[in-house]
Image 1 (cartoon, rainbow, N blue to C red):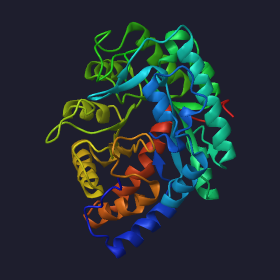
Image 2 (image 1 turned 180 degrees about the vertical axis):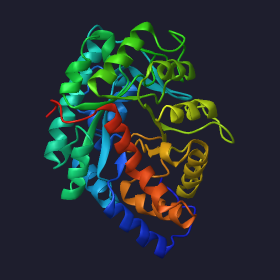
Image 3 (image 1 turned 60 degrees about the horizontal axis):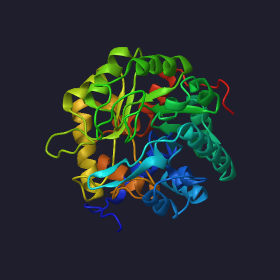
Image 4 (image 1 turned 30 degrees about the vertical axis):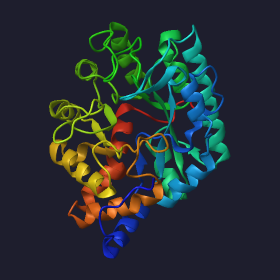
Length: 355
């Protein structure tokens, strides 16, 4: 179903939006453009195989990114993909991993990401300088990301390997509690971050990889912030309040992430919102809580639930409505990319081996 606007486009604001998008690098901190993660899928549960049969479309996704004025987006592998299945409330693990399966699945996904990004004409961004260069050159860049560190169950010493493969953002968990931490939506295994998870946090920082706490339980986020020495992100979520959902975080949790210099990614999922205008409302809510310096874009594109921002080419309309309602030019450029570039730089994401 096509997403609804929920507002009447305002031509002067739309022109202003298009100018800002052209002049400033735009970064989507969490997405699956083109759904590369389904390539080479083996051993998945039947529902995941049926869903994955729709296939991948990286070239179309890169064209869509360019049409929307997006310079760089996360291209995320999914750590627990083979074992997931639908439940009444969303997704959940339906079986256990076979020995070595999680690590094998991740390697296949990362190899596919690198191959198909290159074929689609996109650069692979290892740090902020690569994103800025892509913007100057009018190119799209992909930030290699892992959603769910389930591979560490099998390969606890392989963080350096994924860093060398070009990964610059790692989410600790997805829908499965793993050896690292607990999730928002599955039964607790550790009561937060595990002792091994503490080691993982420190190693991620050592490797210059940004820690993503999306999908993590409140206890996990609290533990992670007590360990982190730099900013972390919660790449795609919303703050509990008028609307509640297990995938949202508490207000105090959002403020704690901001206090540590991190970012909360506004998420256009169809959870309590039906229009793009309501996503603008959500953006204002988060920014007013944590401050404009701590908000980023996390669309979850091409793997989102009933998205109200369904294509990147609709991004200028979203930005135009922010501007029309008084979200300032500085605040808008922070949201669209400057905040993300700051956190990538703070984490030390740079041009170390990865190409």
